[in-house]
Length: 79
Image (cartoon, rainbow, N blue to C red; front, top):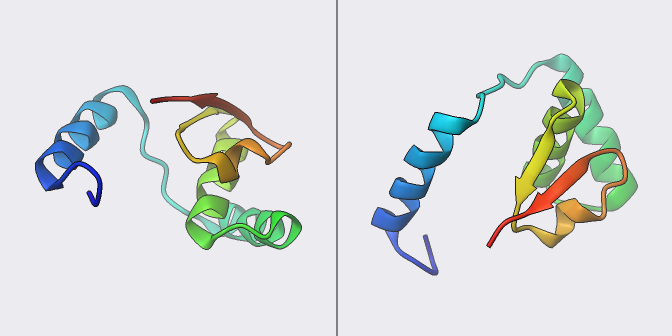
């Protein structure tokens, strides 16, 4: 939102939710998130995203360079 504003962020969110599955954070994701956060020194939000991708064996679509260094997940860069 800082770069492009609330309306653009809302539009992007709406488009993404049509193509992606929402996954609730459970105990398994929470524990794996803590491990990844400790191992890579990343932010909590990034570690939750990575742990979720790892659990569902999904590709993480991101523009976040922190996630690309996590070896346990596959990432695809978006612009």
